[in-house]
Length: 137
Image 1 (tube, one colour):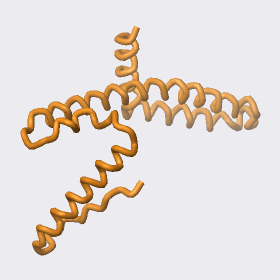
Image 2 (cartoon, one colour; image 1 turned 90 degrees about the vertical axis):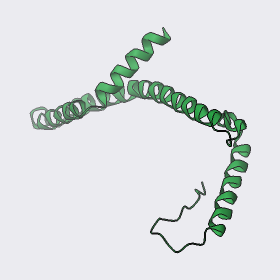
Image 3 (cartoon, rainbow, N blue to C red; image 1 turned 30 degrees about the vertical axis):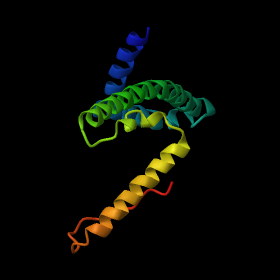
Image 4 (tube, rainbow, N blue to C red; image 1 turned 60 degrees about the horizontal axis):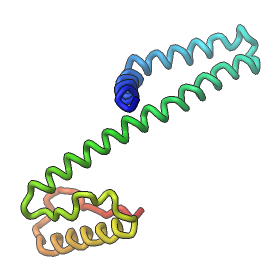
């Protein structure tokens, strides 16, 4: 069941993420708008587009989330392999995505401090590179 859904989600995501799918959606919306005067812009006419878009959106959320979860997992595994293969990298970073938010915040603070130390040591003239500013979220 999982493999069947994965294949379906990937194929569907690829199709609906294409320029052709976007063009088709534009045609559907344009056709709906053009038919407005034919139906006197009735409540039923409005309900057709509202219901259709709601159903499509509801179903697409699950498909997109599935493909996003798979992609995120693959990226983490690739990064884990890179970390594992570098001698100077800390293997404790391999599963950092599973740490609680407080531990992630502490790691972020550590990397901000490392960045600040590096910036203090490298007092070369401005090389045109933009300054890195930590995300304060």
